[in-house]
Length: 372
Image (cartoon, rainbow, N blue to C red):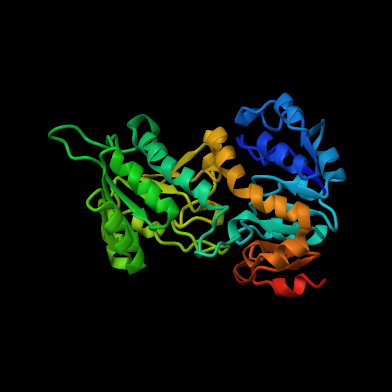
């Protein structure tokens, strides 16, 4: 198979879909790898690194899309990239279709087959291709939130850990999954007073057993959330429903009850965000203010630490990419039901139920898609 990796063109996206090590593995399995010129520079990988791994360098994205059987990326294809996709081509990347009807329409129109990193599962009920970026985003959230809290950036001017005689910042993390756990660990490590909310008693017991009094945990109800948000200096939204739009857990009306200059960090923004007032931002202009509350809603947070993120993502995607290349997408998905769960689009039809529900569209069973 000919595997192509273009340069990411989403604003301030410095990651790359394939590391030189991944390219070397693919070449060793008999596949041809083509990388767009300078695609890896943002993550610290040179064209020479890829050439040494056995890949070829092409000048333009148009050449990559025109010749590759499988396109491997990081972020969802942008409008100009979607126009280059073609019938029968395989796209392997993050998609986040539920809040993005335009992208969904374009992918259906292209006739391509699209497998989304974020809906591939594992035998433990996890999301193995989302987890590495969730870990990165979770660890970044308190860091960027602390920066936003600084008075010069519009925040309350509160130091996360306080100082002797002055209380630390109060941080509320909504969601106790991968993102929330890593966010709570880092925020607590910075000295903040942290409470994590979740609706799973099993998860709350796990967090209590593992982390003890490192941070507090509480069962998530609308009342408990509202009470904690009122007192918070920082709220980190870390709720995920796989493949579906994120639920809105903090309303605009609640902003008026919060402390002026408090910070909302919405890590769920790729799935539409879990605050009513959330809208996607970029690393160039990461924050904005609504009713005196600062919002940090960068849609590709891990792109800020592109080298770490690229290596972590590459480690996770490599086995799946090789299976797709070695077997073809149909056989690979037949053999691995977890990979089949990643199938979102095939030959003009939507194949993921949560996306169909979010967008009000008909869905073809992915098992039926295998037979087409």
